[in-house]
Image: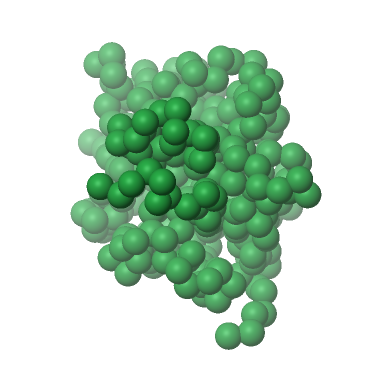
Length: 343
């Protein structure tokens, strides 16, 4: 075992963390963004980076199938990277439709999730194919439905099939929008990808805990104070932070620990997961997290918004003419698919 006195007197270089915003079926944008990240970040740092995808891989753009293929292939192409694939609200709905959501923990049926929003069924044109819909989660029915009012007044665009703009996802698998044939058309490896998506990710350094088992506490911690795993470059130097990544955000008025427990359990009894689909309720960092530096990073909101440690990385928003963006830590550099970088 290496002698304690042989340890360097400075902490290891902060790990590179890439947080990638909503892709929404745009494979060309994803490939360009990935290429730009690979060009910008020094190879040793990129090859060992933590890469967090913030969710919403499907819908709106034309190439959901190819996006999922690209993401599935990353672990084999970059075996020394760590990849985190968060579920977005669109991905949860896609998973619900193809039948890979975890069942409700209390043994109830998914049809119980319809009740609260039943008044919206006709307007949103929920999916209702006999023999398929009877015990489908609410969001799967909404996702594959046919919206009656074709114009989205909020976004100023036409709906693409459903309230989720899921028509393009059906088309990418060679299936007509709203058809249960999609369940058979989606490959098993894509279903597994959807089934395995996490609802929240916390990043905490385990290295120091492991080393603690090997070294004398009072000597080791003089050189290496226990730290969290994500760093930011500031005017005062490197700042060590916790990080919580969740598609839309954490609710400000609820206890954080309770929210994290719920999200880690992926509790599908609820018809709508606020942390994946909320807006104003999840915009800010809960006050209790401000007591210790905690980065909360999300996509979802169709905005690029950085305020202190609250990072919202969704410049694209699923719009064809908008860039897909990522933020790279610790530098806080914003990288876009549209950036022209010297190779």
